[in-house]
Image 1: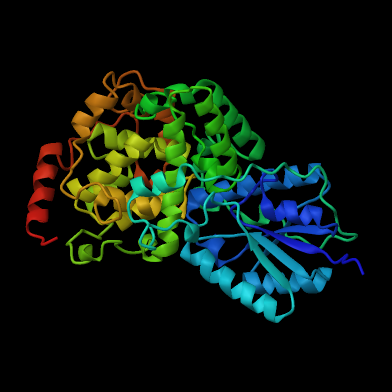
Image 2 (image 1 turned 135 degrees about the horizontal axis):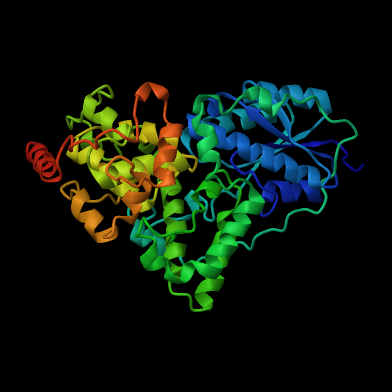
Length: 473
């Protein structure tokens, strides 16, 4: 007999219709498909900006599903309990989802899959979040890669599956299960007034992501190799926000980059390398999950980093008031847009961990709260790379000078002029937006005096090197 029981399609960080292997398989199965999103403990643990951005992405996904005859069912609670309730409500015999790789998702999914299979349910995970499954990349000696360059060389010529088309119609059940209201979840509550400011800069949903990729390939990729290092220039793809929530797939980006490289566009290979850098982050998270919560290089465990977030200099760092213009501009860009230019991220992270000798976990946690492109693997690896405690890290004794870096990458001060208000009589609109977004309790004004450095560039470097000399690495 033909199986006509519904399939529960469990959406997570894969908010798209195109190039979605689990959705594609479900739509082709000839059975009703019930897309569902579950607000569980994993979701509730997200920081303020990622949680707000998730809510925006879910609304866009639901609209796209409705265009093809479907809809998103919202439920909250422990994932296994919710799925069992939905199975009872709908008669579903299959639960399919896109595979996750960070420790929280893996622990949850492993338990859910085992329990559902014991219940006699067809529980199945599919690829789609990565181009290369972490267990398929091995060194010549059979271990996992710990350094990016050989990882890139090993994977750059591998076949990457062609993107799957979005289904033109998704089979619907005769009766839809009850759904909670997305608005009632108040996913943006912790953003307070900052949500309205950040919303002006967000690029939400699959259609917007596709347009962003198309514009980058047409107009930006040719100069990407150079322009991506210039924070004042719109020289990057800006796709991190969409990749983080799966509003576009890495396969789609890879094939677009490959076509650009065949067309002779100079920055295409560098763009492909950045996609593989993202894969490398997940490769490491999968093989060494400790990277998201502790020092990847365990000999750093005894290093006397400051962990007190109440220290005045740490508060100044969070608020963009360190007196170091490159650092402060980056922090304010993040608070206004939910993103930060990659060059600024390196400077910001180096200043916290080296000039201020503060634990990278403090920065990791703050970024986790403030970034709409927050990604558990990329955030963890980026912070440990900057601090020197991670794999393939910048050497611990390399301390970025934020003043000379500014001279090199923002010579005319276009970037800092866009994001800092206090040093300038004519204040840029984006710089003023910062004061509309921040908590009123910070008691900051664009007319304040700009502060002297909490730790000067040369002083911080000497302090960091002195601390390293006392440590036996």
